[in-house]
Amino acid sequence: MTLNRATPRKHGDWSLLINARVEIRQTASDRNRVVEDVMPDSSILWLAADRDNPRQIFEACHGHRVWVTPQALSGELSYRMTTRQIFGKNPTSCI
Picture 1: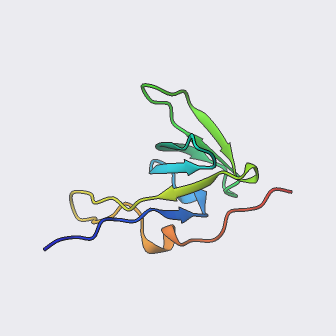
Picture 2: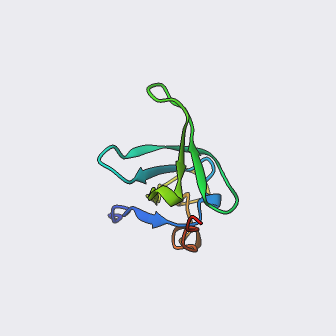
């Protein structure tokens, strides 16, 4: 059995993404790292520091978008994100 390659999806509810690997898109310098923390209203997201990069903050009102690629896991779960989490509500706009 051959599985289809998972397709990245834009994710609007950032509050569900703590500890998930995401891709931040806005410019040519996209980031692909683990989410450390978020604001409950999905207005701000922090990516965890790694070997090559410091902790970074991203705001929805500055045009940053978060993309998630479902990933196969071992054990009882087959994917990190559920359909509801991937296709959740739209991000909050800035005032």
